[in-house]
Length: 234
Image 1 (cartoon, helix red, strand yellow):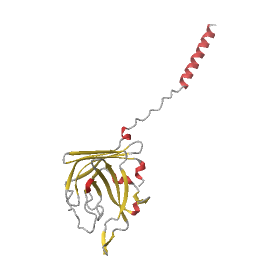
Image 2 (tube, helix red, strand yellow; image 1 turned 30 degrees about the vertical axis):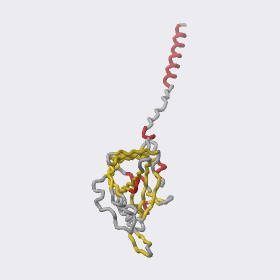
Image 3 (cartoon, helix red, strand yellow; image 1 turned 90 degrees about the horizontal axis):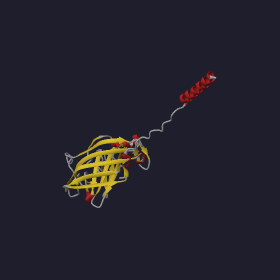
Image 4 (tube, helix red, strand yellow; image 1 turned 90 degrees about the vertical axis):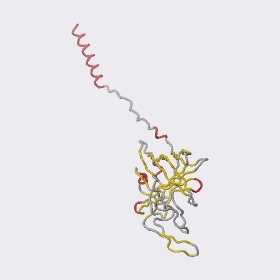
């Protein structure tokens, strides 16, 4: 009788041990923490004569364009200027704009590419848009919209002030080559989030001029751009 009880008890233990061995505890998947930068917006700030301007936009990108690089006047007929340049290349630019009641500012990224390194969409665009935004310093393109030789950055603010000279070939070049010698634009960070969105941060200072060659200093500049994968198709 005791043997039967012992045998039964042993069977229960064996079944319990077998069930315990076979059972697998499935832990719930650990959700990756969402980066707060996923909710960041485009932002710019700078000061002029001690007055600070800042503005935030949900999306500040508003245009991209193609221009003739290394432009020069071939001929002038009946006051019409005929312009030529390097035929196998294109100057590509992307504009980001910030508007407020106090002031409007545009930041323009500029670079010349071989047509072979570009894709045709609405306009010619680089195969890799992010090539425009690599970390490092940029020059201010003084001849933007005119000769279109220089790569780099251009800024415009309200009332016709900008970092580059007149685009008209009817006038001599407005700015000397050292007009921005004490200016700086540096992309300090380019971070890719898990979603594929890029966060660019830059710091800058510059001098902006109007047609009368009056100038203003932009100081303590900061720029943040939030670029999703959909922002890189133009």
